[in-house]
Image 1 (tube, rainbow, N blue to C red):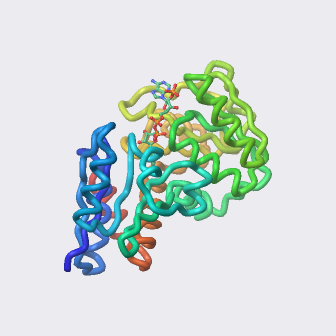
Image 2 (cartoon, rainbow, N blue to C red):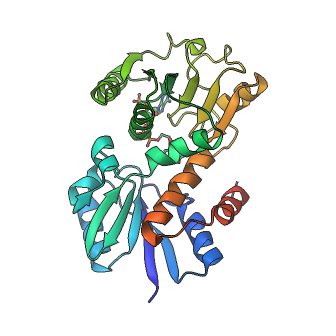
Length: 271
Ligand code: NDP
């Protein structure tokens, strides 16, 4: 019997997850299909019920449901509990089990480059759902301190408290007072750059000592990435996180190593 997977969220029409997972099924000749399922805010309960009815094998969760979905799941992984959000759900004998592959998916491209995190200073621009998973990742890898800068300072303050609760030193600052020269890692976790906008903090001081990671995956070369490349920083692209979190979800659902190259090919072909 064909197994069905999905990504739920709103908006969902531009999601690249169906392309990535369907390419993986094709590469490994699996009898599976992956669809995009639009569930508007306020309709999550009914949406999850319908997924139970059709005995969905698993699904990814994206904006705006990553936090709220937790209410409707039967069990949660440790990561989910720590982050307070789930992006991957597996149907295990009728039980919906929540996982979060954003955290390890974010860390993977850093590890692949053999860049150490322990004892290093981190600047995170943005204080939304993605920033939460990223903070949990840096805390797990024992960064020395996390600074969160955000348009709405209260949201940055809340995430600084979240980081402190995970046992890592943290502070929140305004976009205007941010000085990139103080940090090893500079992470963009806002949606600024999706439409070609300029990075919301001053970035002239970025140089070859910095690791610049923009989690926006489309466009691949955001303003932050372009400027940082010119200044010889180490660059990590958002598509690498997208692929890594998808590969981890694939492993959870199929207990198989994901066909990374086939997934990457279809993703980069889509740009
Ligand atoms: P959220 O909506 O939860 O957070 C958005 C963040 O962007 C907030 O900090 C918000 O600030 C900030 N922001 C939005 N507009 C502006 C603006 N005009 N000026 C300054 N700051 C702004 O989104 P997520 O955290 O879920 O996702 C953030 C981005 O990361 C998205 O673009 C998403 O595509 C990408 N992403 C990539 C992934 C990957 O695998 N590569 C995985 C997950 C997300 P404020 O608090 O003031 O509203």
